[in-house]
Image (cartoon, rainbow, N blue to C red; front, side, top):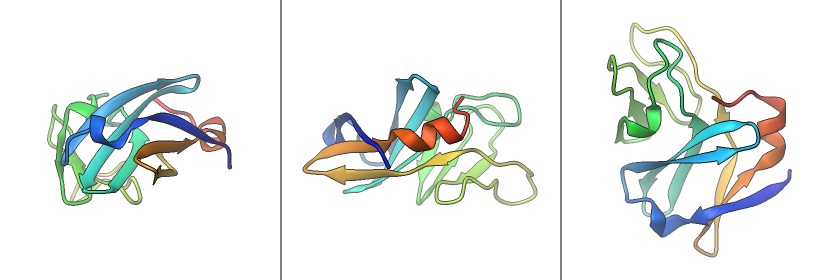
Length: 110
């Protein structure tokens, strides 16, 4: 793994998200708890909705366009919807967000 610093944990409010631009495309960073974060594709596979503008609840995000719900652990759509978003390894280290850049190379971001 090749970890890169993408910003401070405190820059993202709890139950909020931010968009990070990388060489592989845009990645949405979701903060679901005090020190719990997830990284995933920013585009909903349904109609391309910006997931970083969606509603974060539990360990899920709801697309702002058509209410598709995605599990941030697996990227899988929930309920009757079919689809999946890419997820990426991320960790918190000394209050900083560290994203695995090598994972971005093996999967296509938004």
